[in-house]
Amino acid sequence: MVYPDKIKEGATIGLVSTSSPITAEREEQCVKAIEEMGFKVKKAPNITASKGGYMAGEESLRGEVLNSMFADKDVDAIFCIRGGDGANRIIDYLDLDVIRDNRKPFVGYSDVSSLHLLFNQKCDMVTFHGPMVSSNIVDNFTPEVREAFFAAINADAEYIYKAPAGHELKVAREGKAEGVMTGGNLTVICASLGTPYDMDTDGKILFIEEVGEHVGNLDRHVYQLRNAGKFDNIKGIVLGQFTDCREDVPGYDMTRIILDAIGDKDIPVIYNIQSGHDNPMINIPLGAMTCIDTSKKELRFMTGR
Image (spheres, rainbow, N blue to C red):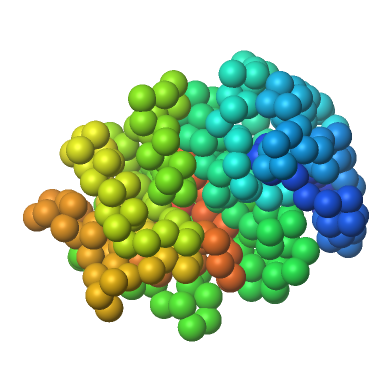
């Protein structure tokens, strides 16, 4: 797996809407936020487009735009504007050879999880489950979040997750593990099953986050993964944010569901990792070689640089 090049001062950032659109006013705010960091901006033409109200234009256009952002030698990194819906529609239009030959930092989360899986598994490229421009950077790019954002992308030999103040890394099951990290949004990774980007968890560490789901839906998705064999040869589990997810009985939450699903499997499980649909939103490299050591409460990523 290849860790992409660092983002240098004055770099050109490609802004893309692979899923849902934003307003023209919000687009201006997004451009301003990136330019104020000292970067140049290249905008996708479909950021404010609409197909059905929930997609940023035709899937063919969204796919072609993403291809062009990877192919463009002047674009140094690609930041997703937001998530939403419809990213899986563009997969048929992506040129994986072009993307593989032009690896660069690609940042997003939520509906973008389908693209993370595709790029990790088919392009051997580390991607970043991190803040998106409209969703996070414009309004909630605190110094702590900003530091982690660039630390994950620009790390030298390794990047160690640093728990934000008041958000301690917690341990549900003790242990040590090493493996490539895969995963993303729970609903989206479940939707990958049976597709060309079907999530491969063999010998890997699984990261999961979700938003706005009832505990019963979380349970259904987790057991879909279990019944599909996705926990059979897994090395460890990392649980991110489960924002606005509702329990029926206090304490019977996602962590408990995971422990039920893996039974007596001797693998580490950590939770309260601050990456997902909430703030602070900390950048996590997907596809990177990852080490969990619960005795140190440490989550560490190797870059291979």
